[in-house]
Length: 416
Image (cartoon, rainbow, N blue to C red; front, top):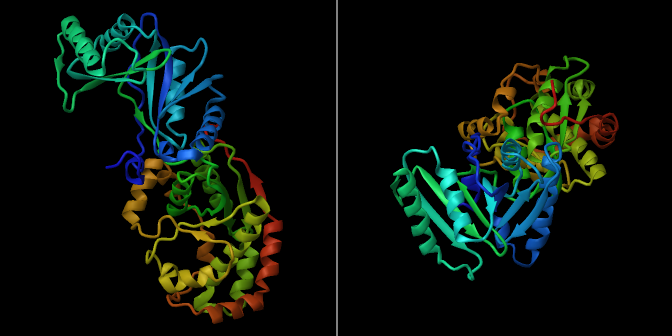
């Protein structure tokens, strides 16, 4: 699998950094490996600046950091930080879109003795096989990469008696020699990959309390979109449980972008109007068209350039190709559907990795159940839906609903 493509980073790890080790004469830091950003050519600097800003915002409650850019990597340092603080920075950095892998590294003087000593310190107390992978960015360093591999490997064998295994070792000692310093590290934690949030603009997610829409939001954040969230509750005819779920979902997703905004629309009375309009089997589609219209009004006010939904082709009756086409007819903004080709098992698997599945499975009273007909229409005709829109005065109603939104600001890590 490609380390730069979508497939690799969809496997979201929950692992902690490897065990801490003290390093004589070294400074602990975080070495961040970039993914597809390195392919951006003349625009690369814009992407990296955005990533730097996102990193600073993500770790501001942990430590004040300095971020230095190298070719294909970033180095995150915090003056006086101990190993525990560096570990926290590593974990937080892996939630920042654009990072492929994060390593707790030791920054040492650019000399052979310093590099060897750091490698010995890192391998102290370990068992199993190992390999050494050295890379020189500064070709003035007295040893070639191969020579450095052999020297460090031999010193580790002499000191600890470990076995060298170049293919699939238990531990990998990585050495990167830069212009002014060298970095020595082992293992690491996989990140999200993708593009820095905000690089692709802003969009609005129609956030239900279900499994699909949180995954859709994650996938679009990973493509560089900053997202806001819009939830429709059945109030005043249902309780607030669906709002609690939406809040909890956005709070969990907030780790990927920070400063998330959740807008809630009390939708019960509008549903009552749809029921009285004679929509019958078209009620669910008419409702979704009104939701999209309301989302469009709000998105334009927020500077959003698209709407995002969790639709998956054929998953339910309202998501047939004919019905999806009828939904597109309701708005002028593009509707992004990142889950369109996934089945439910694949979506649940991704929700589990993003850590939203357990929240989505909590019971609540979905507003859609208030309008569910005995038999839903699977081949909705656009002309029939437009007639219902006219009876509802859907444009005016959407404006009113958008005016009545309630703003919430869930924050990842806040106490419940």
